[in-house]
Image (cartoon, rainbow, N blue to C red):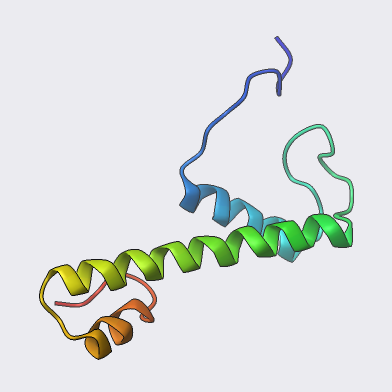
Length: 87
């Protein structure tokens, strides 16, 4: 079996970390194009994925805060914080 014959599922945060590293290096680090330079399109796709992950995390935090009985303004503030919420 070749190195990339099997489809692999990765946790979104691990994929995002890998995409961020590839964007900084401007080179493919996985798959059949490994070592080749990223095209503008491929770099854009990685940027879009990273933004999407950030949006999903913010939406999750916002809805969780509302469910906990916080006001919309407080939930909005919480959803914009990066990292884990401090208690």
